[in-house]
Length: 186
Picture: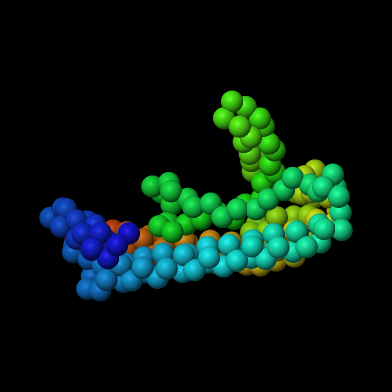
């Protein structure tokens, strides 16, 4: 969300009801700065993930030269942008997929199937047993060290943004009706 959108949204919240207090000074600006920082940081992390993937693929190709094509598993990794309205702007997923090829009227097409990660920010070794060859799994797990760190950082960035919004709602709720607080202590 851009700085203008955050300011407009927070002004609308503050001005929407005569009984709701205006946002405290600096809160709209803080929200805009956090949004900009999170979006920029997620963009940098997505680029880092792509660089890890490229190094993995180069290493896979290099090591794979010693193996016939019949010994290659059908596995890949991708960075996929998350475009859901609920997603943090700039959010992405780094996911492993198995792929297959099909021939049809449109020619040869590649189909991918997501490999479930399970809980946590890193894929377990067992997730790849059905799709990858034993010589590939070690390379995958090497890449997963860096990709897991990237997923952790991206998750924490998104959580920071959610926490700011939650804190904003809590401040507004706490300040919404000071009279109710006074009457409860009389």
